[in-house]
Image 1 (cartoon, one colour):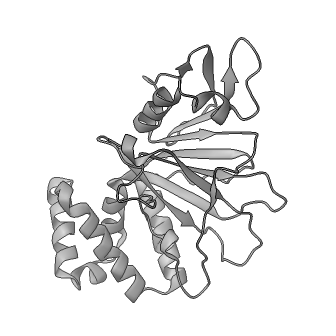
Image 2 (cartoon, one colour; image 1 turned 90 degrees about the horizontal axis):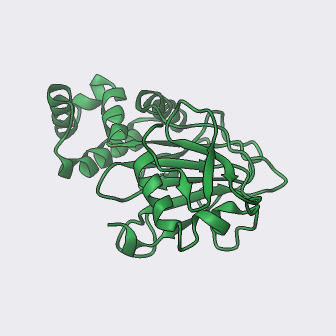
Length: 250
């Protein structure tokens, strides 16, 4: 992805070859060996944190590989899914926190652990997620809801919806999915949404952090728990934190 500033003082991000969504960082190059936890040791230090958050805002997604250190400042990602019912986390969403404002950046990490993480996390551009949800819904289901049919017609005519209608449109489609589809049918629907929206859906590796642009004045991303196989296999955990507080989200 060209035009991005990957310099952080004496350090420069070592970017992996990647043609998909976002930027994948393998580590930092500099005058000395970077700290094992180069995220906390360099990127989130006061001298560099705003430059790093700006990179996340611009790229939408920054994946940092092989991050050492502990996850004491993170919280467990909650939410369980079953064969019979989707969890809320399986729907595309921006991340919230305890306060009234959405945080500017959310970090999701796969810590080093005994059991591998098999469930994927799909991350895609917003509002493209909503466009894909409307277009992948069957004509029958769209037609059964006047508002959804109207949003779809507007999208097909103009290529977009009014900015103040995206949340309502996404909520309406989610209600249709919950009421009209079985869990596995809904999961298959969201996999098609992933494909249409060009989602990042790569397998997790241990020590990997994904920084997602969650709230800013430009382009943001949404994410969801994505099952590419039937739930039930032993599965490693994820943790998360909000390294840019809500006071910085503007």
